[in-house]
Structures are given as structure tokens and as C-alpha cells.
Amino acid sequence: MSACCTASRCAAFVAGVASRCAVQAPAAAGTRRLEGARCRASAAASRRASFGQRHPGFAVRAKALRMAAGSSATGDGPAEASDASEGGLWNLYVKASVMFTNLFPLWTVLVAVIAVKQPSIFTWLTTPYFTGALAMLMLSMGITLAPADFVRVLKRFGAVGIGFIGCYALMPVLSLALGKGFNLSGDILAGLVLVGAVNGGQASNLCTYIARGNVALSVMMTTATTLGAIVMTPIISKLLIGTVVPVDAVGIAMSTIQVVLAPIAIGMVMNRYANKVVQAVLPFSPVVGVLATCLLVGSSVAQCASDIVAAGAQLQIATALLHVLGGIFGYFLPKIFGYNEIVCRTTAIETAMKSSAFAFLLASLHFGSYAVRVPAAVSVVWMALIGSSLAVMWRYIPVAPTLKFDRTLANRRGVLDIWLKPSKKSKASDYEI
Image (tube, rainbow, N blue to C red; front, top):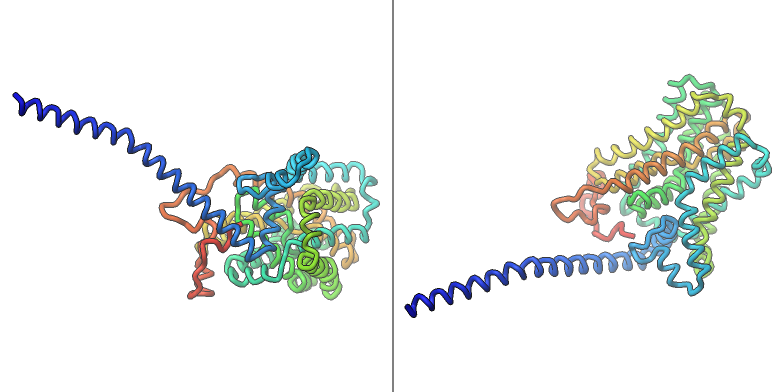
């Protein structure tokens, strides 16, 4: 009887222990998961801080983009700016600037409609003022760059090279094919090809951030194509447009140097020797950039309002398809070489969004026919609409999780990188911002 009681007590004790373990196991597992998440967050913050110390130019650029996109998840977006200010006016400005900047596609469309209906509102912005506004946009890009940032382009030449090919090989050929397919006139065809031959637009960096893409890679691609425009735009214009209308390739090259290279160089010097001034104006740069872009859009459309209406639906469809197909090809081209979803989204936005305002300026300065600038004026609107639409769509389509750690989904070396630098081993923090 005593043995039976002892066995019963032992069984009850074992059952109680098992019950407590069953209750505590999920809690312990949850605690371990929470600690693991905290460790990963701490490691990511450490990598971001390390990246900012090693590459201050991209860190500054990313900070501006985070402020423009209204993100505080990383801890150094608008929340940081708000924490740095004690006054309520600064908090109000941050909220208003975030809303204003995120709605830039809407402002673009509204300005374009007003410019078509009432061109006189924007006709005061003549070519000299237009050139100055575009140079200011390039200067705003230059103040966020440092010489060390260009070394990053060489380290990830494969991914940046794909974006460069999309900008200066895919888009010019695509614009020529669409122009001929829609049977556009010679001058209109030349203008459409000129849009395809210019560099990527700065707005692509903001759209990439909104789409949760690779901001550092986007900035590198924009920088590479912007500097590449000094050589590539005149050559492509001469080869593809020269057979249709006369092209002043030397004049295009000189204008590119004046409007692109000089402001970027001045901005880099300011970032190096007047960094306090740069940091002071940086929070205002997104708003100034949107305002300058809207003025450029209004001026472009207003100067060609009657020609845009006369061109009809053919030009509208051809221009829209140029940016849509550019985004589609820009998405699948990196996939062929083994790049991940984040890189594919980034490249798609970079390829689809062109510096249409710069194309309009070149058409105004170096082409005798007035009609050459019409496609650029149309492209300004379609570029903003399609780029922002891609950004919003991808923001709400999460990247599919992988079965193993994927270098934060943004940093895996693609096949092209391996071919070009087979001995190079990338770090997980290479592209983190």
C-alpha cells in the first residue's frame, strides 16, 4: 500500500513538473525570440552607424530621404529632427514637409494641368532661370556626396553597371523603337530619343526609399548615370538622333558639364569644407527640391502647351510606354543575373525615371526645331506618375521571406559581381543605410 502511494506521489510530481515546463516553454521561447530580435536590431543599428562613419555622403543622403519619406523606424528620420528641436514650430514643419514631399506626384500633375490651361503663369521661367533651377537640383545632390562615395560604385560595379546599361542602352533603343512604331514625326522622334538618352532623375532616390528598396544602390546609380551623361548623352544623341535632325554634340557636352558636373563638384566641396552649413540646410532640401521640380514641370509644359495638345494621344501613349516598359525591363534584367528582389525593384525605378527636365533644357539650347522639346515636357509628368506608382505599389507588397539569412535581402552579390570580381567577398553591411 505504501509503495502504491509512493508511486502515485511520484507520478503526480512528474506530471506537475511536466505541466509547468509546458507552460514555461512557450514563454521561454518567446523571451529568446525577443532577445534575438533585440540583438539583431542592435547589430543593424551598429552596422548603420559604421556605414555612416565610413561613407558620410550616403548617410547624409539617406537621412534626407528618410525625412522626405516620413520614416522614423530607423531612429534617424524626422523623429531625430524633431528630437533635436525644442520648439513646436519645428515639429509642425517636419510633419508638413513630410506630407508635402510625399505628395509630389500630385503636385506634378496639378502643375502640369495648370500649365496647359494657363501657360502664362509659368512663362516667366525662361531658359536662364530654368538652367539655374536645374543646377540647384544638381547642387542639392552634390552636397550629399563625398569622394569616398565613388569608391562604392567600383566595389559594386555589377549592380551599378546594370543600371547604367538600362539608362544608356535599353532606354535610348526603346525610345527609338517606340517613336518609329507610333510613326512620330522626325522632330518629335528626336525629342523622345533625347529623353531616353539622359541620366536618371533624382526623384528616383525618394521613390526607391518609399518602395523599401536599396537607397544606397539607388544613389550610386543616379550618381553614375548623372556623371556618365557628360559623355553618353552627346554620343547617343549623335548616333541615334543625328540621322533624323542636326545635333550639336559638343554643345550638349558643354551644357552637361555646366549644369551637371560643376554644381555637383561645388556641392562636394561644400560638404567637405562647409559641412555645418550643409547640415543646416539639409532638412529643407526635400521641400526645395519638390518646389524646384514643380517649377521646372510648369515651365516645360507651359512653353509647349499648344504643341502638347496638337501632338495628340500618340505622343502621350509612346511616352508613357517608354517609362512603363523601362520599369519592366529594369526589373527583370537584374533577375537574369541573379540579383534579389530589393535590387530588382531599385533598378526598375532607376530605369523608369529619367531626368526629363534636363532633356527639355538640352532640346531648348541645342536643337533648332521647337518641337524637339515637346516629348520632354510630356515625359516630365509621366515619369513622376509612373515612378511614384511603382514606389507605392511595392511599399505594400512585402519581399518574400527566405529560408536562410539573406544578407538583409539587399546585399547579396549577383552573378555579374561574381564574374567581375570572383575573389571579392561582400559584407553584410555593404549597402545598409
